[in-house]
Length: 269
Length: 330
Image (tube, rainbow over all chains, first blue to last red):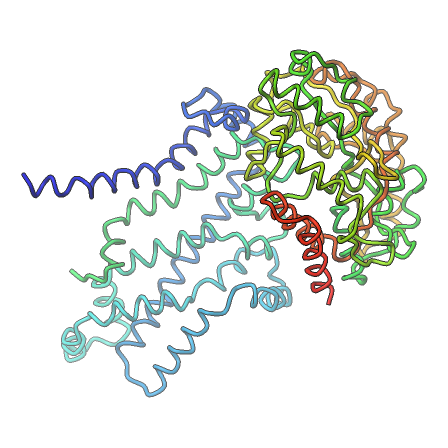
């Protein structure tokens, strides 16, 4: 009994914290069903303007197209980043080479360079390649990140070398070891890395804004900004767009939630 | 391109612009607006979207306190503070609101007196600037009297009048779109000019905030672009008549104000022909020197205002702002 009482302050704290965390989500949900004026008056109850907001949003912007662009970018980035960074992380840990720690240090140092410093040269490269307005130009710079390589390398530490040696003895080639043993064992890390990459790619704003000039290839975050760029912002419509833009990341996270938690804490089961 | 940033961009990136000299008859635009896009006497822009400042007030709230919109027309800021305090006492509603730390209101006051943060040679004139001091004094009075509510964000600012907690606003005419979000207040708004500064030479009841102009890029077919602008934004009442109702874009081009669409009464503003009035206001707005470091100067002044409101002495806060801008200019 006493033990349970001791837990009360902890749960109370978590409870309050939960309210703080969930309130913005609740406000977004409710506001998507309210008129602009109701949103500005901070109305906290659901309203009847959801359909009207839908109609206005789809009249003002090509939402499906933006969703398509965002999805193509996020999925393309995630798949490629997982393949490339997992091979890199695996290689860094499993193979032995004198220069690998130096190379890793260089990679980690590269993490310190702010994106603003590389943005202009990056734009020049893609402009010369004729890839302005191409989704490819958004995907490529994001498929190899020091953070993911580090995450995979750290997780690979727990990858049992005995299995590796046994596999080699059994005559499996290196690529097959990676594909048939490493990937299934590292499921949790892949899930965590996948969620992080998908969310970052989906929410990325600055680089797509720079390289995707035409409205036809705009992504969801760009569409949301465009909604508040005219003479008048319709906050109900804006909240609906924010809601729609949040759904995919919520779905991805919910599907991979369990593995995500395991992956971040580095557990292998 | 945003008017306030026009000179900065022309001076910093001269290679990107073409002269717009043949793109309009510039005498058909307010001089103050043409000046934004003029560098060394050469026109680089055709003014489009109007930033002419308006004072918009809730007539029902004013009536409750025994006033009409005429009591707020052609007045001075001292009058305004007195009347606004009275309105606050009788109705509980402040007449103005704005973002804390923003210099928009101060800049509108300053420009209304034909004063700027720079002299004609581009030197900062923040310290010892009588008009700026009068503007800041007025602003501090408004805030301290409770008739100007400071909020933290732009969205909150829009919220103050849309949800009816504040009964007026002073801003560029583009704010009228946001005002009309409050459909339940239709018919209860009216638009007039701004109060003018007391005891400042050159003070007027007219000013501007924002607005934008067309630029012709250097890689364009300049003749074709000039011809296009001349027959549209600098020559077609039909164009302005079409875009006013559909998008709320108010013209700077003075002849546009004579057309029937601009003379239409606007129900939201109690049947007032607001847009024709605003085009007329625009012609009386004094010029403002912007230059390359305009935004740095505005930011420095914003910081100074925040300090002054929290009790710092005005002269030292403005001296500091002046040094900050001089430092930025190198």
